[in-house]
Image (tube, rainbow over all chains, first blue to last red):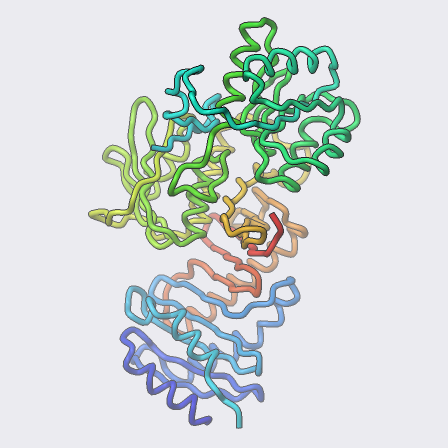
Length: 116
Length: 374
């Protein structure tokens, strides 16, 4: 895994309310980090693959998402798409610092220098 | 204080300090106002020109056009403070002309004067950008009233703190503007019998209260008022927060409720077409500005039957998308134990889309932000 992503995952650990996060690489492999018992890495990977595979349906509907946010009763899931093909999934709890800083976290991920 | 009437015949901006000014007491030379009248009745135009020039003590510079085409030609060469348009004109009628004017000259004040006033026509003209809708008078006294109304309109200036707000505004317009601008404010809404408040914080509707009613029910009640007035006040945090929903959905629900109350026969085939969403107020950013607007909306039953649509190019495709979103969210929600799905927000390069899925309703809204010349 890219060091920058690892470091960024580590920085996420200090933000209260993040259940887990994962990045899907352009080659389809996933790396995930869980911060809460309710969110296993396997399930995060599965969700990432699932969502990543379905992205083409949005373009088929004339929509070109930069990021998407699913809001559920007990949490939110944000999927962020980088131009280089990497995709971030962030699962967070509602009404937490993570929820308040979701846009900030998104911006950080988009700004990560992942070259090399 | 700025007060705006909503509904009925009150949908025109009233500006108390101007209305209170006694006529004929101005000691400084009056500013020249350039006004263009468009009417195919030349006799009426001649009368207007003579009387209004005299009543304005020549502070009105009146130009006349006998057709919409001629008016558009004149507007290419000169600027005006106010245009007054007749509705019934051959070729291009007043409503069509208003639509063109709203697009080409958004800052130009517009009034309609017609001998065939109907409620439907009045609504259409206001929706197309007119600030005033006046019935053609049949007496000199009536003409004087028309002159007074037009004079107030042409001399009215936007109030401090409301820069960029359209002159013709409604409650929904202001809520949209506050939410899109991520502003914080309180809208105090009142009619003869009740007063309520809608709290907007950082562009989110967080609370509404009217009497003992709070939450979405209170919000819907206030938006369903057939008439009254509202004031925009500085934000103060409410004691409680009773609303969590997206403002787009709240407004659309209000539009749906209002539409259901309007006793109109449904069309023979196809989905019911929702009333045109109100234009979003513009920002005063100079010649170019970002102007967010509702680009598309669709409301379906929980089974995917279209109930309302606005500029939805392909309703079937959108319904299919919402079904896909529902299925996908169900899978992911179960995987991550996130509970019941509520909505998906999609950030787009030039705007965003929101799909809300409820057991009995599916809603899709797309808001576009584009750069356009004012």
